[in-house]
Image (tube, rainbow, N blue to C red; front, side, top):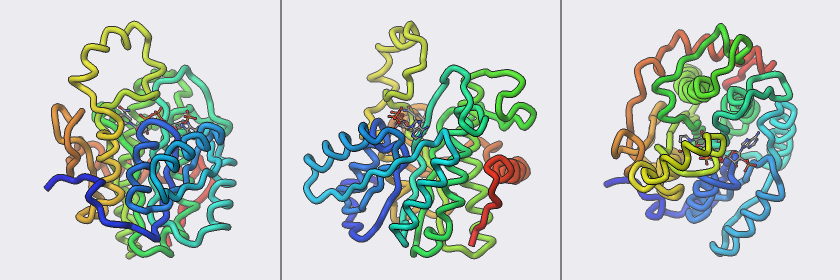
Length: 303
Ligand SMILES: NC(=O)c1ccc[n+]([C@@H]2O[C@H](COP(=O)([O-])OP(=O)(O)OC[C@H]3O[C@@H](n4cnc5c(N)ncnc54)[C@H](OP(=O)(O)O)[C@@H]3O)[C@@H](O)[C@H]2O)c1
């Protein structure tokens, strides 16, 4: 039987962090989780937007437990402050859902000098996972879910131009960042299993869903592709099912990759899927891990 988050039994007592929870897929993930009685920490860069989203959800769903905490993934200092504030308050973390992301912005650098897509989509989530590892290890059956994309298929980790130092091709940088999120989940799974940690690392992608993510797409392209939207995309509440399956599915195992199973992986019911073989490359994943430790300035402590 296919996964449907509405059929999941109460998960009362569980705590989740959802990054980028105030809109798009993050908002739908938050709704799916609170409906199952999970307490959600909405980790967002814009507190005003997040509070208004929280208000909307708590009005619609009675008993929804939500707390807003500030996290700006374009600043490692903010990742550190968020992790500190969270761990000061909570001794348990059942679900770390690394959803926030940006796509094809004009070239900008994060506060720490990273190309913005690599920094926001991947490197900050790498550091966040690292800083929250002790709390995840303290929690029975904790899960970390990274967010990838169909874009990983044509992505490559370009160690010679990782931060677009030499040239910036915005779509290539997005593909690289989403491949990095997927390779991180696999490498994390291998390292956790070697360290005999109980923590599960998985990844998922939502297929295609019309959200603010496409804001930077040229307006003419948005217009031309409008007739295809009902055919080749699915609404955020359906797209988020893949991420909710990764977070809540009872048959999920460390190393699983979840995504829509319909036309070209773009739409349809979520299921376990296979990535492109290059996403499983252990040598590249190991090198990426080591580079990420250097760039984030923190050795990754697994247990
Ligand atoms: N939509 C799709 O078709 C699709 C396909 C494949 C993968 N994905 C992935 O799914 C995830 C969610 O995307 P979406 O479609 O829901 O996009 P979205 O509607 O644009 O939402 C992105 C979220 O990330 C947040 N965010 C952006 N920069 C941030 C930063 N510096 N610090 C903290 N949060 C930040 C945004 O906050 P603000 O509201 O403040 O901007 C927003 O909450 C992304 O990782 C994306 O790559 C989406």
